[in-house]
Image (tube, rainbow, N blue to C red; front, side):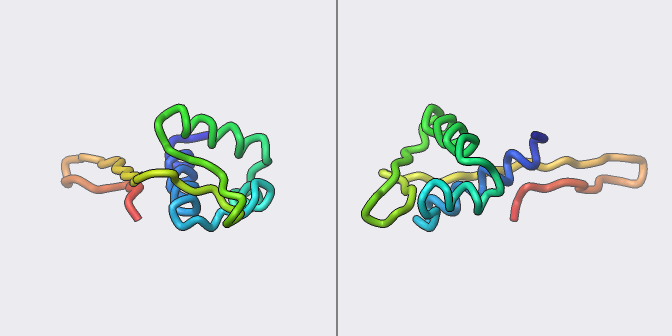
Length: 92
């Protein structure tokens, strides 16, 4: 997976979890257009990096068990004799 796609997927996963609107694992995987095993791998990777993620049966959604904010800042800038031009930006 390329970097831009990975960062956008991470941002999307974070937004669903933060808003507590993931649904059950099957639903969440469908929202992300990935398989359930891929979802579990991504969530496990996020947990090992410090994201406080847990599934709540009460609300049927993944949620953060503590404060969790995600900030992604990544851009590609082309510099030529005509100046600088931003050609890629992950900021929404």
